[in-house]
Image (cartoon, rainbow, N blue to C red):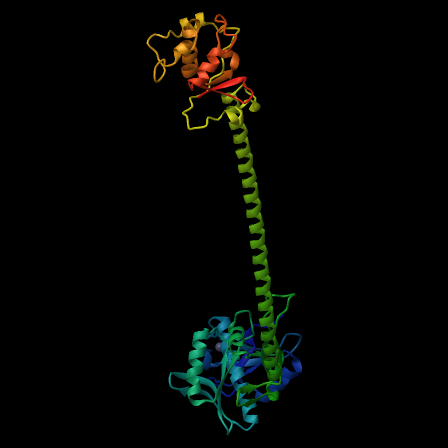
Length: 422
Ligand SMILES: [Zn+2]
Protein backbone atom coordinates (compact mmCIF):
# COMPACT_ATOMS: atom_id res chain seq x y z
CA UNK A 1 0.00 0.00 0.00
CA UNK A 2 1.31 3.45 -0.87
CA UNK A 3 1.01 6.37 1.49
CA UNK A 4 -0.96 9.51 0.74
CA UNK A 5 1.37 11.68 -1.43
CA UNK A 6 0.55 14.71 0.69
CA UNK A 7 2.02 12.96 3.73
CA UNK A 8 5.22 12.11 1.89
CA UNK A 9 6.79 15.57 1.42
CA UNK A 10 8.03 18.46 3.54
CA UNK A 11 10.05 21.65 3.12
CA UNK A 12 13.32 22.21 4.99
CA UNK A 13 14.82 25.55 6.05
CA UNK A 14 11.60 27.41 6.88
CA UNK A 15 7.83 27.69 6.30
CA UNK A 16 8.22 29.43 2.90
CA UNK A 17 11.13 27.32 1.67
CA UNK A 18 11.08 25.74 -1.77
CA UNK A 19 13.62 23.16 -0.71
CA UNK A 20 11.57 19.98 -0.42
CA UNK A 21 12.37 16.42 0.60
CA UNK A 22 10.50 13.14 0.25
CA UNK A 23 10.14 10.73 3.17
CA UNK A 24 11.73 7.33 2.30
CA UNK A 25 9.52 4.31 2.92
CA UNK A 26 12.48 2.47 4.46
CA UNK A 27 12.66 3.09 8.20
CA UNK A 28 16.47 3.31 8.29
CA UNK A 29 16.62 5.93 5.51
CA UNK A 30 13.70 7.76 7.06
CA UNK A 31 15.54 7.99 10.40
CA UNK A 32 18.62 9.32 8.53
CA UNK A 33 16.49 12.01 6.87
CA UNK A 34 14.91 12.98 10.16
CA UNK A 35 18.30 13.18 11.88
CA UNK A 36 19.81 15.24 9.02
CA UNK A 37 17.19 18.04 8.91
CA UNK A 38 15.37 17.84 12.26
CA UNK A 39 12.71 20.45 11.38
CA UNK A 40 10.18 20.28 8.54
CA UNK A 41 7.43 22.59 7.28
CA UNK A 42 4.21 22.53 5.23
CA UNK A 43 5.54 24.96 2.60
CA UNK A 44 3.58 28.09 1.74
CA UNK A 45 5.56 28.19 -1.55
CA UNK A 46 3.19 25.58 -2.95
CA UNK A 47 0.05 26.65 -1.08
CA UNK A 48 0.63 24.83 2.23
CA UNK A 49 -0.34 26.25 5.67
CA UNK A 50 3.27 27.05 6.76
CA UNK A 51 3.09 25.19 10.11
CA UNK A 52 5.79 22.84 11.29
CA UNK A 53 5.42 19.10 10.42
CA UNK A 54 6.42 16.10 12.50
CA UNK A 55 8.43 13.30 10.89
CA UNK A 56 6.90 10.06 12.15
CA UNK A 57 9.30 7.15 11.94
CA UNK A 58 8.25 4.58 14.48
CA UNK A 59 6.47 1.30 14.99
CA UNK A 60 5.11 -0.69 12.07
CA UNK A 61 3.64 2.32 10.24
CA UNK A 62 5.13 3.58 7.00
CA UNK A 63 7.26 6.68 7.77
CA UNK A 64 5.42 9.92 6.96
CA UNK A 65 5.02 13.61 7.79
CA UNK A 66 2.07 14.86 9.79
CA UNK A 67 0.66 18.18 10.90
CA UNK A 68 0.83 18.74 14.65
CA UNK A 69 -2.27 17.86 16.61
CA UNK A 70 -4.91 20.57 16.56
CA UNK A 71 -3.58 22.14 13.32
CA UNK A 72 -6.09 22.30 10.51
CA UNK A 73 -4.08 22.68 7.29
CA UNK A 74 -5.62 25.44 5.20
CA UNK A 75 -3.43 24.88 2.19
CA UNK A 76 -4.23 21.41 0.95
CA UNK A 77 -6.57 21.61 -1.96
CA UNK A 78 -6.73 18.97 -4.66
CA UNK A 79 -4.46 16.16 -3.33
CA UNK A 80 -3.18 15.19 -6.78
CA UNK A 81 -2.05 18.67 -7.81
CA UNK A 82 -0.66 19.24 -4.33
CA UNK A 83 1.41 16.07 -4.62
CA UNK A 84 2.61 17.15 -8.06
CA UNK A 85 3.69 20.52 -6.64
CA UNK A 86 5.66 18.75 -3.90
CA UNK A 87 7.25 16.37 -6.40
CA UNK A 88 8.22 19.30 -8.57
CA UNK A 89 10.02 20.96 -5.66
CA UNK A 90 11.76 17.73 -4.63
CA UNK A 91 12.99 17.13 -8.15
CA UNK A 92 14.15 20.68 -8.73
CA UNK A 93 16.31 20.46 -5.60
CA UNK A 94 17.52 16.98 -6.42
CA UNK A 95 18.60 18.30 -9.83
CA UNK A 96 20.23 21.32 -8.20
CA UNK A 97 22.27 19.16 -5.77
CA UNK A 98 23.34 16.85 -8.60
CA UNK A 99 24.36 19.65 -11.00
CA UNK A 100 26.24 21.56 -8.28
CA UNK A 101 28.10 18.36 -7.41
CA UNK A 102 29.33 18.40 -11.04
CA UNK A 103 30.68 21.94 -10.49
CA UNK A 104 28.05 23.73 -12.60
CA UNK A 105 26.29 27.04 -11.81
CA UNK A 106 22.59 26.36 -11.18
CA UNK A 107 19.71 28.79 -10.99
CA UNK A 108 16.16 27.61 -10.16
CA UNK A 109 13.05 29.39 -11.48
CA UNK A 110 15.16 31.74 -13.59
CA UNK A 111 13.12 34.44 -15.29
CA UNK A 112 13.27 34.67 -19.08
CA UNK A 113 11.27 36.85 -21.47
CA UNK A 114 7.75 35.40 -21.46
CA UNK A 115 8.23 32.92 -18.62
CA UNK A 116 10.49 31.12 -16.12
CA UNK A 117 12.70 28.08 -16.53
CA UNK A 118 12.83 25.39 -13.82
CA UNK A 119 16.56 24.74 -13.85
CA UNK A 120 19.09 26.88 -15.69
CA UNK A 121 22.65 25.49 -15.85
CA UNK A 122 25.98 27.02 -16.88
CA UNK A 123 28.61 24.34 -17.41
CA UNK A 124 31.36 26.75 -18.40
CA UNK A 125 31.21 25.67 -22.08
CA UNK A 126 27.47 26.20 -22.56
CA UNK A 127 24.14 26.95 -20.99
CA UNK A 128 21.33 24.43 -20.62
CA UNK A 129 17.74 24.31 -19.43
CA UNK A 130 16.07 21.39 -17.65
CA UNK A 131 12.27 21.58 -17.49
CA UNK A 132 10.54 19.37 -14.92
CA UNK A 133 7.00 18.94 -16.29
CA UNK A 134 4.68 16.89 -14.11
CA UNK A 135 1.34 18.25 -15.37
CA UNK A 136 -0.12 17.87 -18.90
CA UNK A 137 1.32 20.04 -21.67
CA UNK A 138 0.26 20.18 -25.31
CA UNK A 139 2.78 19.52 -28.07
CA UNK A 140 2.17 23.05 -29.34
CA UNK A 141 3.10 24.59 -25.95
CA UNK A 142 6.10 22.32 -25.53
CA UNK A 143 7.43 23.42 -28.93
CA UNK A 144 6.78 27.12 -28.31
CA UNK A 145 8.33 26.98 -24.84
CA UNK A 146 11.36 25.12 -26.18
CA UNK A 147 11.83 27.91 -28.72
CA UNK A 148 11.46 30.52 -25.99
CA UNK A 149 14.01 28.85 -23.67
CA UNK A 150 16.43 28.23 -26.52
CA UNK A 151 17.01 31.99 -26.83
CA UNK A 152 19.62 31.91 -24.05
CA UNK A 153 20.36 28.19 -23.70
CA UNK A 154 22.14 25.75 -25.93
CA UNK A 155 19.84 22.82 -25.09
CA UNK A 156 16.41 22.32 -23.50
CA UNK A 157 15.73 18.92 -21.88
CA UNK A 158 12.20 18.05 -20.80
CA UNK A 159 11.76 15.75 -17.81
CA UNK A 160 8.25 14.31 -18.00
CA UNK A 161 6.06 12.45 -15.55
CA UNK A 162 5.92 8.63 -15.83
CA UNK A 163 5.38 7.63 -19.48
CA UNK A 164 1.97 6.66 -20.78
CA UNK A 165 0.50 5.92 -24.19
CA UNK A 166 0.13 9.17 -26.21
CA UNK A 167 1.37 11.10 -23.17
CA UNK A 168 3.86 13.96 -23.38
CA UNK A 169 6.94 11.70 -23.23
CA UNK A 170 5.51 9.30 -25.84
CA UNK A 171 4.72 12.17 -28.22
CA UNK A 172 8.16 13.77 -27.82
CA UNK A 173 9.81 10.38 -28.33
CA UNK A 174 7.96 10.01 -31.63
CA UNK A 175 8.78 13.52 -32.88
CA UNK A 176 12.34 13.96 -31.52
CA UNK A 177 13.54 10.35 -31.24
CA UNK A 178 14.40 10.76 -27.54
CA UNK A 179 12.50 11.65 -24.36
CA UNK A 180 13.16 11.63 -20.62
CA UNK A 181 11.00 11.06 -17.57
CA UNK A 182 11.65 11.35 -13.85
CA UNK A 183 10.47 9.35 -10.89
CA UNK A 184 10.94 9.19 -7.16
CA UNK A 185 11.84 5.75 -5.95
CA UNK A 186 10.77 4.32 -2.60
CA UNK A 187 13.84 5.80 -0.94
CA UNK A 188 12.86 9.27 -2.10
CA UNK A 189 15.69 9.31 -4.64
CA UNK A 190 15.10 10.97 -8.03
CA UNK A 191 15.82 8.84 -11.11
CA UNK A 192 15.79 9.77 -14.79
CA UNK A 193 14.10 7.50 -17.32
CA UNK A 194 15.30 7.38 -20.95
CA UNK A 195 12.72 6.24 -23.52
CA UNK A 196 13.18 4.38 -26.81
CA UNK A 197 10.70 3.06 -29.27
CA UNK A 198 9.82 -0.61 -29.51
CA UNK A 199 7.65 -2.86 -31.63
CA UNK A 200 6.16 -5.78 -29.76
CA UNK A 201 3.92 -8.04 -31.89
CA UNK A 202 2.58 -9.62 -28.70
CA UNK A 203 1.55 -6.21 -27.33
CA UNK A 204 0.60 -3.77 -30.13
CA UNK A 205 -0.29 -1.06 -27.57
CA UNK A 206 3.28 -0.94 -26.31
CA UNK A 207 5.19 1.77 -28.16
CA UNK A 208 8.14 2.52 -25.88
CA UNK A 209 10.46 1.06 -23.31
CA UNK A 210 12.33 2.93 -20.59
CA UNK A 211 15.59 2.55 -18.67
CA UNK A 212 16.20 4.39 -15.38
CA UNK A 213 19.41 5.99 -14.15
CA UNK A 214 20.31 7.62 -10.83
CA UNK A 215 21.08 11.29 -11.26
CA UNK A 216 24.70 10.91 -10.13
CA UNK A 217 25.38 8.77 -13.25
CA UNK A 218 24.10 11.51 -15.60
CA UNK A 219 25.70 14.66 -17.06
CA UNK A 220 25.12 17.41 -19.63
CA UNK A 221 26.77 17.69 -23.04
CA UNK A 222 26.21 19.53 -26.33
CA UNK A 223 22.99 17.53 -26.88
CA UNK A 224 21.60 18.27 -23.41
CA UNK A 225 20.89 15.70 -20.73
CA UNK A 226 23.12 12.64 -21.05
CA UNK A 227 22.05 9.46 -19.31
CA UNK A 228 23.84 6.11 -19.42
CA UNK A 229 20.87 4.82 -21.50
CA UNK A 230 20.88 7.68 -24.03
CA UNK A 231 23.20 6.21 -26.71
CA UNK A 232 21.48 2.85 -26.49
CA UNK A 233 18.02 4.51 -26.66
CA UNK A 234 18.92 6.53 -29.79
CA UNK A 235 20.25 3.42 -31.54
CA UNK A 236 17.25 1.35 -30.48
CA UNK A 237 14.88 3.99 -31.86
CA UNK A 238 16.86 4.22 -35.12
CA UNK A 239 16.64 0.45 -35.56
CA UNK A 240 12.94 0.60 -34.70
CA UNK A 241 12.38 3.22 -37.42
CA UNK A 242 14.28 1.18 -40.02
CA UNK A 243 12.29 -1.91 -39.16
CA UNK A 244 9.11 0.16 -39.15
CA UNK A 245 9.86 1.22 -42.72
CA UNK A 246 10.27 -2.44 -43.66
CA UNK A 247 7.06 -3.36 -41.89
CA UNK A 248 5.25 -0.52 -43.67
CA UNK A 249 6.65 -1.63 -47.02
CA UNK A 250 5.63 -5.24 -46.38
CA UNK A 251 2.19 -4.09 -45.30
CA UNK A 252 1.85 -1.95 -48.45
CA UNK A 253 2.94 -4.93 -50.56
CA UNK A 254 0.48 -7.23 -48.80
CA UNK A 255 -2.35 -4.76 -49.40
CA UNK A 256 -1.37 -4.36 -53.06
CA UNK A 257 -1.43 -8.15 -53.50
CA UNK A 258 -4.78 -8.32 -51.78
CA UNK A 259 -6.15 -5.61 -54.08
CA UNK A 260 -4.76 -7.41 -57.15
CA UNK A 261 -6.35 -10.68 -56.04
CA UNK A 262 -9.67 -8.96 -55.49
CA UNK A 263 -9.47 -7.33 -58.94
CA UNK A 264 -8.55 -10.70 -60.48
CA UNK A 265 -11.50 -12.41 -58.81
CA UNK A 266 -13.84 -9.61 -59.91
CA UNK A 267 -12.59 -9.86 -63.52
CA UNK A 268 -13.05 -13.63 -63.57
CA UNK A 269 -16.54 -13.24 -62.17
CA UNK A 270 -17.39 -10.63 -64.85
CA UNK A 271 -16.01 -12.86 -67.61
CA UNK A 272 -18.02 -15.83 -66.34
CA UNK A 273 -21.14 -13.67 -66.25
CA UNK A 274 -20.43 -12.43 -69.79
CA UNK A 275 -19.98 -16.02 -71.03
CA UNK A 276 -23.23 -17.09 -69.39
CA UNK A 277 -25.06 -14.10 -70.90
CA UNK A 278 -23.65 -15.00 -74.36
CA UNK A 279 -24.77 -18.62 -73.94
CA UNK A 280 -28.23 -17.39 -73.01
CA UNK A 281 -28.36 -15.11 -76.08
CA UNK A 282 -27.18 -18.01 -78.30
CA UNK A 283 -29.89 -20.30 -76.90
CA UNK A 284 -32.55 -17.66 -77.47
CA UNK A 285 -31.27 -17.04 -81.01
CA UNK A 286 -31.33 -20.78 -81.78
CA UNK A 287 -34.88 -21.09 -80.49
CA UNK A 288 -35.85 -18.14 -82.65
CA UNK A 289 -34.24 -19.80 -85.71
CA UNK A 290 -36.15 -23.01 -85.00
CA UNK A 291 -39.43 -21.15 -84.83
CA UNK A 292 -38.64 -19.28 -88.06
CA UNK A 293 -37.78 -22.56 -89.83
CA UNK A 294 -41.05 -24.15 -88.68
CA UNK A 295 -42.99 -21.08 -89.82
CA UNK A 296 -41.25 -21.11 -93.21
CA UNK A 297 -41.98 -24.82 -93.64
CA UNK A 298 -45.66 -24.28 -92.91
CA UNK A 299 -45.84 -21.29 -95.28
CA UNK A 300 -43.88 -22.87 -98.15
CA UNK A 301 -45.28 -26.38 -98.19
CA UNK A 302 -46.76 -29.32 -96.39
CA UNK A 303 -45.22 -28.47 -93.01
CA UNK A 304 -42.02 -30.37 -93.72
CA UNK A 305 -38.92 -28.22 -94.14
CA UNK A 306 -37.98 -30.38 -97.20
CA UNK A 307 -40.99 -29.24 -99.24
CA UNK A 308 -39.50 -25.85 -100.17
CA UNK A 309 -39.58 -25.17 -103.93
CA UNK A 310 -36.40 -26.39 -105.66
CA UNK A 311 -33.94 -23.78 -106.89
CA UNK A 312 -34.65 -24.48 -110.62
CA UNK A 313 -38.14 -23.03 -110.13
CA UNK A 314 -36.73 -19.61 -109.76
CA UNK A 315 -37.86 -17.57 -112.80
CA UNK A 316 -35.10 -16.41 -115.21
CA UNK A 317 -36.06 -12.75 -114.90
CA UNK A 318 -37.38 -10.75 -111.95
CA UNK A 319 -41.05 -11.58 -111.65
CA UNK A 320 -43.27 -10.41 -108.81
CA UNK A 321 -44.33 -13.50 -106.88
CA UNK A 322 -47.53 -13.54 -105.01
CA UNK A 323 -47.79 -15.64 -101.88
CA UNK A 324 -48.07 -19.32 -102.64
CA UNK A 325 -51.14 -21.12 -101.45
CA UNK A 326 -51.65 -24.84 -100.99
CA UNK A 327 -53.40 -26.76 -103.83
CA UNK A 328 -57.11 -27.48 -103.44
CA UNK A 329 -58.21 -30.51 -101.51
CA UNK A 330 -59.55 -32.79 -104.21
CA UNK A 331 -61.61 -34.84 -101.82
CA UNK A 332 -63.52 -31.82 -100.62
CA UNK A 333 -63.69 -30.01 -103.98
CA UNK A 334 -63.23 -32.08 -107.18
CA UNK A 335 -61.17 -30.22 -109.78
CA UNK A 336 -63.88 -29.67 -112.33
CA UNK A 337 -64.69 -26.88 -114.73
CA UNK A 338 -68.27 -26.98 -113.47
CA UNK A 339 -67.17 -26.03 -109.93
CA UNK A 340 -64.66 -23.49 -111.24
CA UNK A 341 -67.45 -21.74 -113.18
CA UNK A 342 -69.49 -21.43 -109.97
CA UNK A 343 -66.68 -20.42 -107.64
CA UNK A 344 -65.13 -17.80 -109.93
CA UNK A 345 -67.13 -16.80 -112.95
CA UNK A 346 -64.96 -15.38 -115.71
CA UNK A 347 -67.25 -12.46 -116.47
CA UNK A 348 -65.23 -9.70 -118.14
CA UNK A 349 -61.89 -10.96 -116.73
CA UNK A 350 -58.92 -11.15 -119.11
CA UNK A 351 -55.20 -11.61 -118.52
CA UNK A 352 -52.85 -8.67 -119.32
CA UNK A 353 -52.81 -8.37 -123.12
CA UNK A 354 -56.21 -10.14 -123.54
CA UNK A 355 -56.90 -13.63 -124.96
CA UNK A 356 -54.28 -13.43 -127.67
CA UNK A 357 -53.49 -16.85 -129.22
CA UNK A 358 -56.49 -18.62 -127.75
CA UNK A 359 -57.44 -20.01 -131.18
CA UNK A 360 -54.20 -22.03 -131.18
CA UNK A 361 -56.29 -24.44 -129.07
CA UNK A 362 -59.28 -26.52 -130.26
CA UNK A 363 -62.64 -24.85 -129.75
CA UNK A 364 -63.68 -27.35 -127.03
CA UNK A 365 -60.75 -26.24 -124.80
CA UNK A 366 -61.32 -22.46 -125.08
CA UNK A 367 -63.46 -21.99 -121.96
CA UNK A 368 -61.44 -24.57 -120.05
CA UNK A 369 -58.12 -22.81 -120.88
CA UNK A 370 -59.58 -19.43 -119.85
CA UNK A 371 -60.52 -20.82 -116.41
CA UNK A 372 -57.09 -22.46 -116.04
CA UNK A 373 -55.47 -19.12 -116.89
CA UNK A 374 -57.56 -17.37 -114.24
CA UNK A 375 -56.81 -20.19 -111.84
CA UNK A 376 -52.99 -19.89 -112.16
CA UNK A 377 -52.98 -16.08 -112.40
CA UNK A 378 -55.18 -15.32 -109.43
CA UNK A 379 -55.56 -18.32 -107.21
CA UNK A 380 -52.49 -20.58 -107.21
CA UNK A 381 -48.75 -20.06 -107.67
CA UNK A 382 -47.45 -23.64 -107.80
CA UNK A 383 -48.78 -27.19 -107.79
CA UNK A 384 -48.73 -30.59 -109.47
CA UNK A 385 -49.12 -30.78 -113.22
CA UNK A 386 -52.45 -32.64 -112.94
CA UNK A 387 -54.06 -29.43 -111.71
CA UNK A 388 -53.66 -27.86 -115.16
CA UNK A 389 -56.69 -29.72 -116.53
CA UNK A 390 -60.24 -30.20 -115.35
CA UNK A 391 -61.55 -33.63 -114.41
CA UNK A 392 -64.60 -33.03 -116.56
CA UNK A 393 -62.67 -31.70 -119.60
CA UNK A 394 -60.48 -34.40 -121.17
CA UNK A 395 -57.08 -33.11 -122.43
CA UNK A 396 -55.02 -36.31 -123.06
CA UNK A 397 -52.39 -34.43 -125.11
CA UNK A 398 -51.83 -31.81 -122.42
CA UNK A 399 -52.50 -29.14 -124.99
CA UNK A 400 -53.55 -26.64 -122.32
CA UNK A 401 -50.26 -27.02 -120.37
CA UNK A 402 -48.29 -26.46 -123.55
CA UNK A 403 -50.43 -23.41 -124.42
CA UNK A 404 -50.01 -21.90 -120.85
CA UNK A 405 -46.25 -22.41 -121.17
CA UNK A 406 -46.18 -20.85 -124.64
CA UNK A 407 -48.21 -17.87 -123.53
CA UNK A 408 -45.72 -17.40 -120.62
CA UNK A 409 -48.25 -17.91 -117.88
CA UNK A 410 -46.34 -20.76 -116.15
CA UNK A 411 -42.91 -22.41 -115.79
CA UNK A 412 -42.23 -26.15 -115.43
CA UNK A 413 -39.68 -27.82 -113.17
CA UNK A 414 -36.89 -29.98 -114.60
CA UNK A 415 -38.86 -33.22 -114.14
CA UNK A 416 -41.86 -31.62 -115.82
CA UNK A 417 -44.26 -32.81 -113.12
CA UNK A 418 -44.81 -29.50 -111.26
CA UNK A 419 -45.55 -25.97 -112.44
CA UNK A 420 -44.89 -22.50 -111.08
CA UNK A 421 -46.69 -19.28 -111.95
CA UNK A 422 -44.46 -17.15 -114.18
ZN1 LIG B 1 -0.33 22.49 6.18
